[in-house]
Image 1 (cartoon, rainbow, N blue to C red):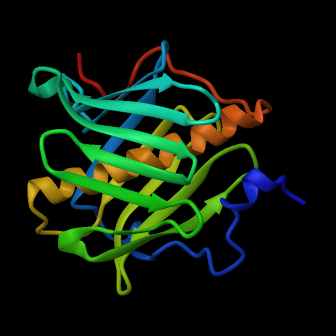
Image 2 (spheres, rainbow, N blue to C red):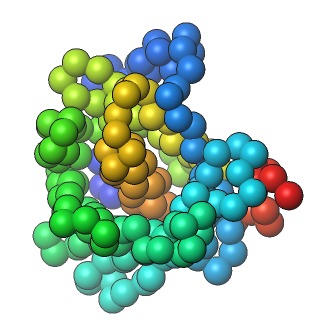
Length: 206
């Protein structure tokens, strides 16, 4: 039986991935790579500058962690702060350039997304202490998919819903980043995973 902290990632219902993930091409595919010194970079294959950079800030264990998301492609402008709150247990995302806050409850993974309405996470596969994948969905369809590898180093965030505005795309991508960081945080707290870092991002062009 899995430890209690891991149970929330194990969904004992249908975990079949949406068939679009193998039959169609996403509207946008962003690669995630964890580097040294608590840095993560994200971008599209062939980018010469990362679209996003994430830096983790550890705070007192009783209060959680924070991740600061900036945009190197836009001069390092701060985009969002992801706050993993322990009291109460939830993920709060504050978009710095906009008057927008998202609160995702740990208990059910649901949140209100404004333009997209009510969204929720669906787990679609996980290897204990290893790779994992999820889908962000509304009541009818998949909006976003997220995958991370066995060592939580390389991942892919794919936007499936077409014709979204740039702010909405950025919103769901940041929510996708928060899911990966939440999972890495759980792995760190377990202190028994093979979590690692990469020397460089293979998708980033020279």
